[in-house]
Length: 125
Image 1: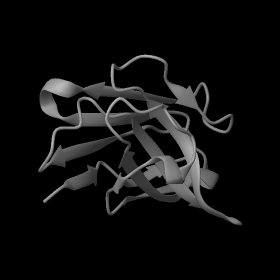
Image 2: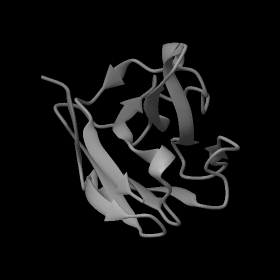
Image 3: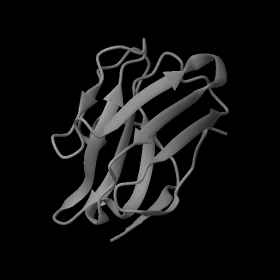
Image 4: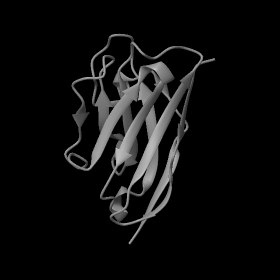
């Protein structure tokens, strides 16, 4: 059974930092692009960041560029999202997703095949 499990969410004050992790099991994702998303008004899910299967060429949404950093450790089958300078508007559930093997580093939800259950991030003002 393929599973993506997010962790690392919690409550933090504005300006603080959190690091989210996404562990994978049931299938290796070292050959798959990985992304992070969150719900947004009027959208199914808002793209935040994505990283290629090789670990290079990360993409970021303008709303998080310069504040969030995506990385991966294929030896641990884990993807990370380091979130700095958090704002109250970053409060949301954060989802990681895996795309098809050797696929593009997509920025839309329909480019991803597997999803985790999400982890809650709450930023207080």
